[in-house]
Length: 125
Image (cartoon, rainbow, N blue to C red; front, side, top):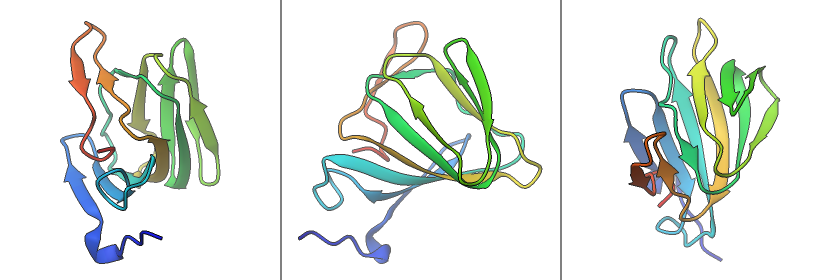
């Protein structure tokens, strides 16, 4: 049974958020990646798609989701299942920022709207 200790978690910081990977193929050998997202007020991720389903659960603050033609706000305890291959954007919708736990299959790849393949994000590898 692989165990990933807190001291082994991987932190990735982008201009949009901080992701802390708890488990992934390169962290415990998991076939599902699980990570924690922290987004400060005013931050938003880029418009992109992922080739696999993702599950987002907000644990603090509020996150605005644009998924395809739908938009919603998630608050603590709310979860959203984002389908594969649909353009999405996640933004902070709270004056205090937000935190979420996210899960996706290992190897999930990101693509920009112009078709540029961004590969597997480091928090999923």
